[in-house]
Image 1 (cartoon, one colour):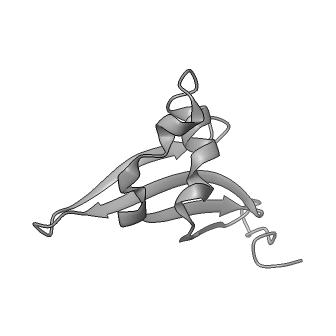
Image 2 (cartoon, rainbow, N blue to C red; image 1 turned 180 degrees about the vertical axis):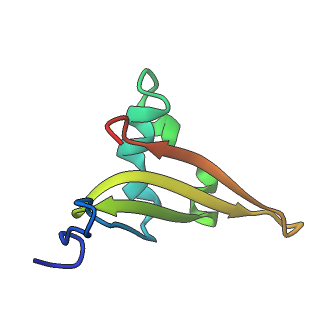
Image 3 (tube, rainbow, N blue to C red; image 1 turned 45 degrees about the vertical axis):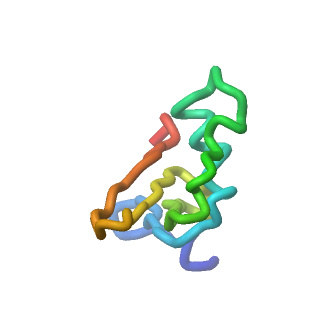
Length: 86
């Protein structure tokens, strides 16, 4: 059993937050935030400038968030999506 599959003493699998490619966020963003829009809608041109993170439980991606730092140094979280089952 790897670390993503271990169960803690409360019977809950731990959540692992790790960087993901922008493309790794698209399916969940689309399904949760804009399901009626084409998939290209969740792939904005500035995605390459962001830092993207995924929350994984038992190896499954359950949430995504993207961090963008503007030229003024102000950081913003954008495009936060969590699987409704969570």
